[in-house]
Image (cartoon, rainbow, N blue to C red; front, side, top):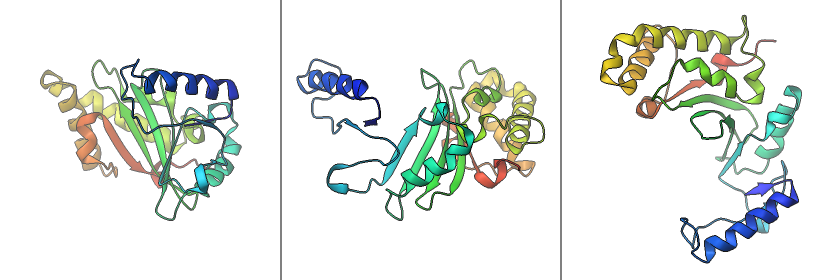
Length: 204
């Protein structure tokens, strides 16, 4: 784990001592370590990580800084590596992320929602990645997508008696039938849906 704040790194290392000593619920031999670092992604012996996960990192940056940050992190990946950059709430019940290739180009957007007690899928708008969070306004593609998803979720209310998973699947089936390129069908039961970046990319 990498963190730019040295105090947080030190706290994580102190907590890791308790893990290694068996004083926590985590496995004492957990393959994890902590170091100070940022978008340059320093790794032991310069190894290239196959997957980089950066969550709730870019929230304090400006939108125009996102592309450069993606590029800097992606430079550390091997050709087939991926960067997963996104945002989630404190409990991980609302989560969104962008998958970015080693070339720094975004590929997909994924929404992951806790379906139990879900009022509407557009709750994800609160936790969109920095590249999209200010784009949830009329005239923007991500706004159109979330509105359509909300509409199908509402129309699928008749399936709610079979549980929220069935309602979610019915909403996504309807989206697919309407021509929306919703992907990740095997993950739908988990409250996830993935769409191509080209579908929701910022306009202008």
